Every structure is written in structure tokens, then in C-alpha cells.
Length: 142
Ligand code: 5GP
Image (cartoon, rainbow, N blue to C red):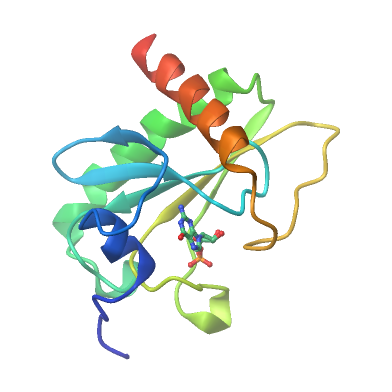
């Protein structure tokens, strides 16, 4: 497998080199909004410890990450009054991965609203800021 490249975009976000709409942070992960959301509220849970994806991740990181994914899934579902939540996680280009630092997609789903394509179409910054505020409020309420 190709080795981890610390110049990837999520590593830069974790180092504070580029901005993001952060909705959650703990010792092990940050959760940020996807800038090309497939639905409003599309959130990425990003472990702080570097790995390219699930295949090379430290198993100790995965437990903390999935607990955070559950927490964000509940908050996103509540914040957007969603009917369901998709959790996606891609490993290598062949599987659809485009940013090579482990992350989990948390995407609210509504029964009658089709989901947009993956990683296509930037959302306006004000929409992301509004979505982030909703998710932070939902997290604070739990
Ligand atoms: P992957 O295809 O690797 O599973 O997902 C990477 C995700 O990162 C995509 O959904 C894409 O929209 C998102 N993304 C790409 N560049 C940036 C960025 O600079 N900031 C944020 N917050 N998300 C990004």
C-alpha cells in the first residue's frame, strides 16, 4: 500500500493550516463539515492519529472513532430532522477515496430527497456555517 502523505487536506486541517467548519473535537477525533456536501449536514469524522485509511489504522483509534461517529450521527439526524443517516468510509481510489487520511462520512438522509454525488459541488460558506451551528446545537442538547 502507498504510504501516508502528510500533505493531504485533512492533515492540513488538523494542523490548523487551512480553515474548516469544525463541529466537534475530542482527544481522538475532529468532526468537520464536508465542503462538497451530498446533503446539508454532511459531516466528516477525522481521527487525529495519521493513517491513510481503515486498512492501515491503529485499531485503538477505531474504537474512539466509531463512538464519535455514533455521536455525530445522532446529532446530525436530530439537527436536520432526518429519516436516516448513512455512514460511508472509502479505502483507496478504487473504492472512491479521494483524501488519503482516514475519515468517516456521516450523511443525513430524508425519505424523499435524492442524495447528491460524492465530492462534487462546493456549498456556499454561509450554508456550511448554518449547518455547523445546527449540529453544534444538537450536540450540546445531548
Ligand atoms: P473521500 O472521497 O476521501 O471518502 O472523501 C473526501 C471528502 O472530503 C469528499 O467528500 C470531499 O467533498 C471532501 N473534501 C475535499 N476537500 C475538502 C476540504 O478542503 N475541506 C473539507 N472540509 N472537505 C473536503
